[in-house]
Image 1: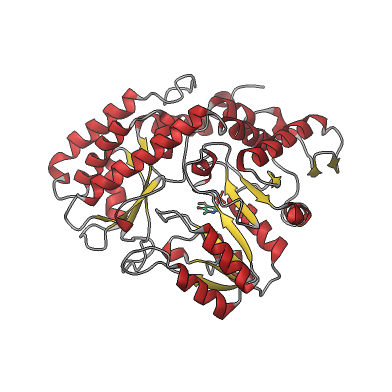
Image 2 (image 1 turned 30 degrees about the vertical axis):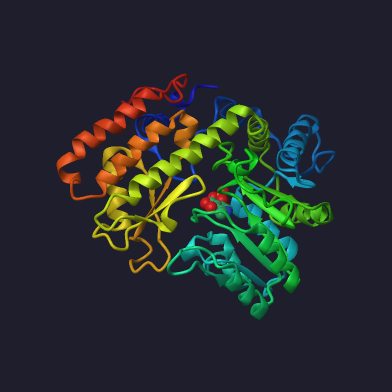
Length: 420
Ligand code: PLP
């Protein structure tokens, strides 16, 4: 029972370095967040030792009386928070939750209609190298070339032509709300299941700041670690009539033993997500994203913002008219201490490893405590960094980033060994 630093100094050093990176930089990857101490405690707990194949009350292993309590809490909280009839909290990640939904509702070769990856969809929505693209017949819808919005009449037209068994609504990079009622109508017209992947915006839904897909969809999946800000993992919500199918698609269909230490973290996350403090944080997340989008929209030099702004926790920077690529821009921001990811924009002429876009998100910094005025400052820093002024001003920009990071200490209670 020696501490990590004694047992494995190489890993301990890297963990410490990662903590210092998170503390000293501004994290703006839209899918990331900072979990609270309570979730860290769950994930580093003895629950990691326990096998618990099956579900609460119906396990294939002995000694599950305590993990049953934890998993049932997570299930009950998920159902209450989102108003869902059934919840499965076992998927190891968002991709596994999605795989289970396909497994439950489709046979290989059946048609799925989802948003194309190049236009903001996720890998699991039918990308050709993913299981979804390999096992199923994929019909994709896209955004419009001018507005960069989804045209629901076109989704309906593709659905009528391709008769999908399942329609998938959800995104990894789309800055506006989806029309869940219209998706439902289309699904009903063609006799398809409606599956909403709310991985990105679930925190906003929980806070009542984004329309909920739950009343419309047959099944909804989410990750717990994006806007929800909790344990890394996935979850499925569905109507009672699909509960058995979903449970058996997760276990034994896709997974073996559930990660009960993570499920405990999910339970805690779902409790926190019902609080007023959580709602206030999601409000700052949204207000901050609007500030950043507004600053980038007026940056000039070919820098633009897709759809002209945002209704969610991220802005999509459009660099198709800029000399800078997504890669150049990501590197510049990294240099001054802001972490983002480059992201292909729709109709991108640059290759996927280079791209013409950036995805900039506010959830992690809102969790860290930043207020709207801090996001205004960050918008100004990023906008300047993406112009030719960068070379002359990089030192000043880096100092402004450090000043913000210093104002909002992170994980101060965590002690890690100083670098060797
Ligand atoms: N669904 C959407 C919309 C996502 O954006 C992501 C992750 O980026 C996932 C699913 C997959 O989640 P995970 O990375 O936990 O497998």
